[in-house]
Length: 238
Ligand SMILES: [Ca+2]
Ligand SMILES: [Ca+2]
Image (cartoon, rainbow, N blue to C red):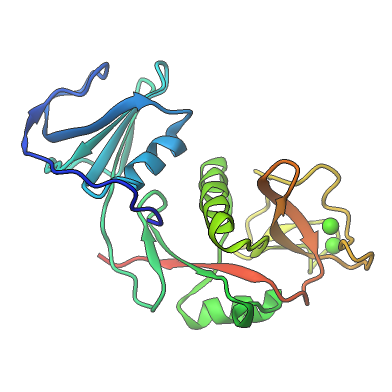
């Protein structure tokens, strides 16, 4: 959704997906190459203007992107370690939201200085746009956000992002705003510590924070009244 780095002309015909045990599909192969995982494979598709679907073979790590695919499969299937996912296009109702086909949600990244707000004000703004702060409840979603945020960081140097989790209700008991317990986590080592990096306590809200040594984002707890960037998610429409 964020990258248009590659564009190519694609022709329609029946193709076999290399190394994958799937029937020929209508379309043409964009790339067929090694990817580190399913996320990297979906990101490869993002970077291709005409990509409509990916096939990812977990055992061989081969990612194949397909252009102009017309066959209509379900959103995601897993067949003996082979993942298939279509790059659907849906509409987002509110301005500035973009459809993330990998997650089937609309996302908006509030980036600029004037857009930086406290956790609760950021949350209210998302709710006014028929959504809420993003809930990062799976490794897939987290890894995808790490790629998005690293990409945005390269362009804007934004280092902090509110997401929809806190221990406001019960100190030490972090939960998502959806009410789900937090099971998957990506805490930076030593976090959460109920402290912010200015030495103050009562850090109750979860942020993605850019770690300069690792050059990647992880979760930290931070005071909820800190004004930082935020990520909203809302339902997509067909
Ligand atoms: Ca806390
Ligand atoms: Ca902390």
